[in-house]
Length: 212
Image (cartoon, rainbow, N blue to C red; front, side, top):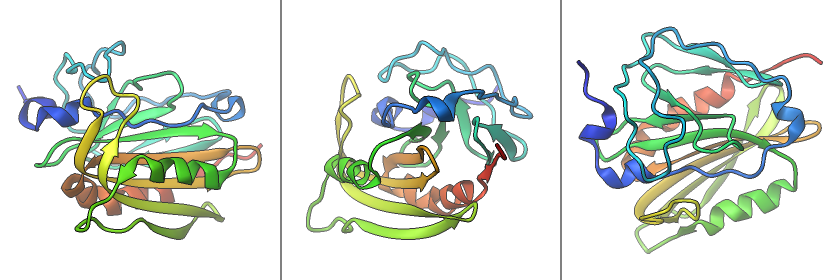
């Protein structure tokens, strides 16, 4: 039997929950899911942010398409899909790494894009050796999306314990849509997020908007 990634990585990252803003109803309406090709029984959907998933997971054999309502997105090999930790998240994934598990969430919400970016910045405190916040843009589905890279001490206001986590990093992506925004947010140990950064960007680039 394969060992669950939570068993072999530092426990503090088993408790990190990637948080997002409330989901706009338009993005969630009509959401359907296509089951991954090969996965083990998922962790308990009622697990809290500081609980350890109860079941083993196996690596997905090949990338698969995830239906998120207004859009579809391709999940890469090596990520572990788990039940979202709260009902405002559309999808949640674990990103394995030697330094600890990272978490990536997808969500949708309205509101001002800059206010959302400022909220993400406010979750990090940087020291002299930390990389300064970096903002870039990329094209996704014919639209301009914003990419925000952050590093430092991460304050996770939704975690029950160990809410302040040093040596953390975030890659946050905001794709403005006609009536809402789509968010991808990955947080975890700096080494883990750096390891998966290219895959996170490819994940975002795979977005295919559905026709109305």
